[in-house]
Length: 390
Image: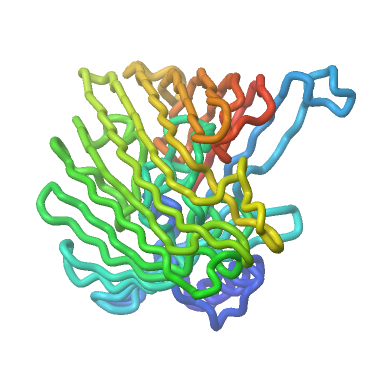
């Protein structure tokens, strides 16, 4: 691949993202894949370009416009373009985009990466805030298709008030010391609303690998490695906190939260057993159920309470056609302090062709647990999903 082709590819990626070529500067996946076409420019400089697609068909009970019939909908859940590169022995960059509508793509990641040693690295730009495993996975490295049915940290609340898709502008220091992994960062957090004093959001994640080490870019995670890394047992604690991180311009409140998550993957010959669990505790002064009575303007209200989920999966070692079957079950329960408890159960089947780069998913989910943490419609949905990455 020559320099002219590289230049053409970059111009196309930048145009689709709605930014100029002068913004080239930083990127990585919402998790581990560093795939795509890699071009070696010299001994220390290289460029890699890739893409990821998640598309699905979904049928929801009583979801049709009539209100009495099942819906039938096709959708592109994610369409991402990836670019990573190295400009110096110790300096890399990541630049990713994602589709948010048929007409719009956004800058997902834009990271200047100063990576001096395994123990100490600094990333600056727009990146994932250190958080629990499911938020660090991104959608492409989850075990289940519907992992976002628990309350999420502020940057994953939708819109662009406190970040977007789990990302925010800031700085993260991360590294690995033996079996211990850490990531600590400071970010913008909520802009405007209750944060009139422009307080920063602080976030951190600390993980210990009791058995084999997990292997991901930076401080990102996966919820399964399909047995490729052998036996894994990792426990992690994460936190986020921001003064004036919830409420409205006229009435501010603080936000803090912590999560404990555990991942176990055990290889039995050619079979793989994967277990994943998480407990989350949020403390928000103003919540979705109880916005401040004195509020002036809109409220950036969050979840207050606890939630947990548990997932179990078993991948059979025998190949059927080009892939392997991995059935799983996932249970979620959200317990807000000021509303009724919600829950959901997902029963699914992954057909794994090439790890996270090519898989098909069929799942059935039933319950009222959702990303807000508060009760919503009692959903009964059947989904057929397709995931491809290069």
